[in-house]
Image (cartoon, rainbow, N blue to C red):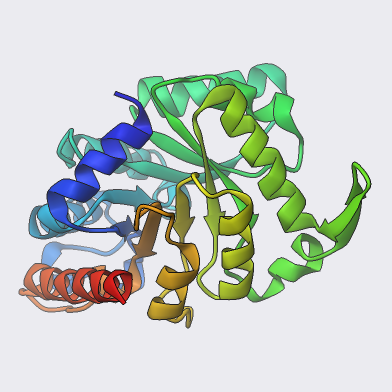
Length: 277
């Protein structure tokens, strides 16, 4: 099965467009699990979150940086976290990778083969040849940064550029290139922040069939209903609404996993309500 087929199956099985971010922050890990600077604490935390939410999500998304901060033991915790996630649930490694030639080949082998992730996030700044080792993997997916959720995203992403006789913001030109890469490789998705719903609607119009990973709902201030209505595809799906802090840190005591489950249910149901409206 292709990534998009696995994603669709997971979404239908769970009735959900919710993607949970597995981003272990040492300052927020429940103290009863162990020392916050111990990667074994991270693994115990992730195991509990996965067990509590696996039937409620369409995907998981660990961010590489949170694990690298623990050194080699953190990398091992990331790899083991991947093994803990049921095989039928797609897992996106948020690595924002992109480099030249053999370096990208090595990254693709690491993330897809050695670590067995289903998809990665990439930045397109170095062009198609830097992404080809990822895009060419027919059973995986590549989520291209188009319009990110951070306040400074407009510094470069909103700059007007002229390409092929058309002048428009850079993020739309990137979306256009991604649409073409999808036609060539069939493995492309997009990343657009919930904090920019107008831009999300523009990207959806440009790329009607591509899956869009949407960070920025919740702690970053993105409005859920506006986001869902701006980004849905014609079939009423096509979105992965990412939530990390609002779900995994919903509770801090011994019942943190149950609190995370309640938060995930609430968010999943709110997403579905927005889909229906």
